[in-house]
Image 1 (cartoon, helix red, strand yellow):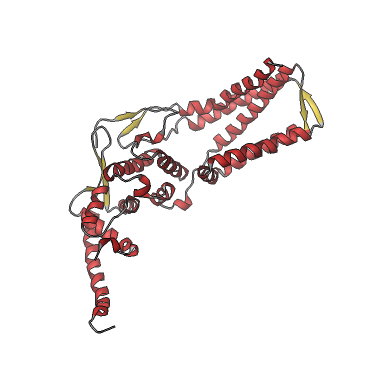
Image 2 (spheres, helix red, strand yellow):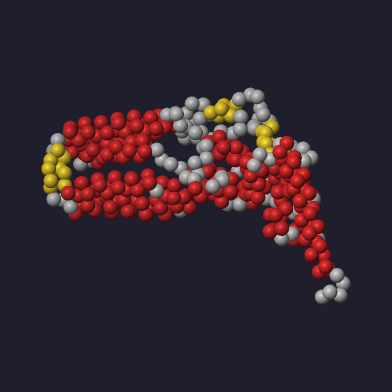
Length: 252
Length: 116
């Protein structure tokens, strides 16, 4: 074993499969995804990936030729593959639910403030909110099978998801406009910010010690900032949303 | 017989004992093992078949692994028999010899001239 501990440069945006440059990127991405979904630790994924890398480099064959389908090969490597699956932490599920609510209320507050009036709550608003939260819970519960389904047909799933979300969330807002009550924008804004803060804290707590980075044998990962970035994701999305809500008003 | 014509179900049955036998000669890495199998007349064994087998041998305690350094990278993954693995390799070789003797006692008669 190489006594010099090489350090793998850790970056939220880096390609985890870059430790195996001889392996076709599509194959290694599918391989890594399947091993992640089987809840294999990052260092074991690195070991398996480097084994493929060295065999491909020695033999001159492609990974597909030498190992066949990436997901099928990954399952061959994991004992009891059918009984294993990635478990999403409840802290992450609840944290993201609260974060989505935070975005929803924050953008609603901002839009109402720009309009200069109170935020009007309609029947459709509550229905859309309930549908949105229900979908998030569904995704969390069915995370592993959904990820496998999406990985095989990402473009089609993306289009269908966009249309489905638009229909399920947008149509109630469009047709169920019976007014219920008004809310001052600042109330929604404070609620939104509070929810985003709580969400960020929960996600950070769930991810800060769990980088589980993919490392080649003998490599020591640098402390990852992935947990911090995951915690800031929804607040950043809120700011982007606010900009998107604000821009059309410049031309009104 | 042309090595490319061995039925895959036969190869699946014999691969374990052959890999153990190869490792009796000393630690080796995956691609070298496939080359040795091919030179021995068993045909091409793909990485997708070999490495899961080596993984099962490791889980059973017959094989231990070591990454040996290469140039600027983690190098190659070498597989070596444990003491338990050496006993298993010898035991399987003996049993395989018995098995082939048993099967040939039955099947050799099919080659008797004039039988068919």
